[in-house]
Image (cartoon, rainbow, N blue to C red):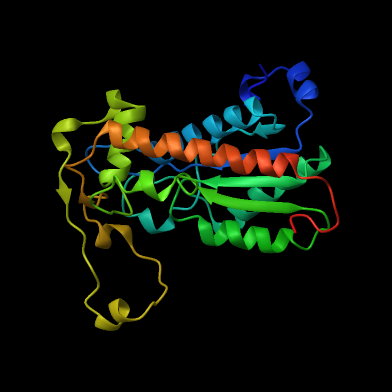
Length: 256
Ligand SMILES: [Zn+2]
């Protein structure tokens, strides 16, 4: 069985698969509080990207998944040690280079699967630039974009970093790396300027001011079972997207 996971394939496998869709998983390496490891985002996104690719190819897709990028955008984490980061211009160039490589292999449908909250603006900007090239179709989803609402209803406490969701995901994926005794309700802080709450003002949050411990929200209801429910749904949904992209005929009006 041809998995589509490039790092696991031989050159004969790649030629036999003749992929027409490429997946680029984008992870991150930055602190996730006292309970979770730095690599959380990377393991999470890789689980869905690899799982979705395998499932898509079992269902008749021709999808290749590139290796997961472990470093992305974390300038706002720099008060914490070794929050791995690169500049926006470097990241953008990296994404575009990978897309150009796919084009040179005649793969024109490319799906970024993003696992880190700092990245979407720049991935979208790369998509805008790449739209200048005829015949290139890039798409972006996040780790659990394709999970059903029914599945994601398991979350009891929302958090945008290292809360119930990410703690559950790591309890499922790498329980050996979770410091169970450190799982807690981590404080979140909000700016004193009221208008920043009241209006949808965009600004880059200095993470050490927002989440002093580098984790935020109540993670005490985290469980591996919740993550399994959401991951299974996300993998099934991601596979559906990839199969549909792979099986859609070439046309001047794709995807319309
Ligand atoms: Zn994370």
